[in-house]
Amino acid sequence: MRRHTHRRNKVKLKHHMIKEAIPCIKAISDLEFVKLIVPDAIDNSSHGTNRMKLSSAAVNGFKLTFGGAGAQKFHIVCDPTDENRKALENIIRKVGKG
Image (cartoon, rainbow, N blue to C red; front, side, top):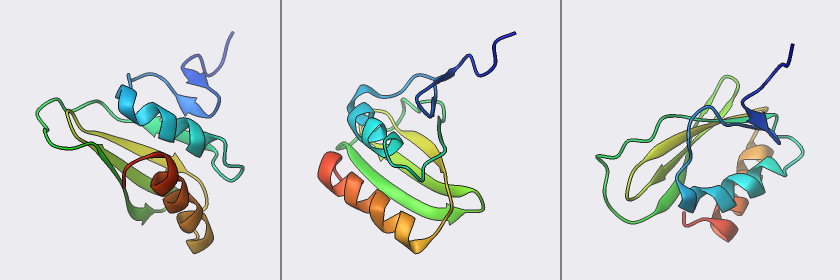
């Protein structure tokens, strides 16, 4: 029996991802402290410019919101420390628009 059939390189792929968010998600998945990235369903009713924003820390990590022509939230599973938050914000600043 195969386990984790919807995972590829720390990213759970049960839901589709907005193609503009993929480069930033790939860069985040390369970070050593990131254990898993879970994308939510895409909300097509959202409009605007593409922008990534790191939301508040949850018990098991952070929430990342990608807004634009469609919106999608990503749950980043890791230790919610200030050091990890700064590393994630640096990746978003370099790769994504945030």
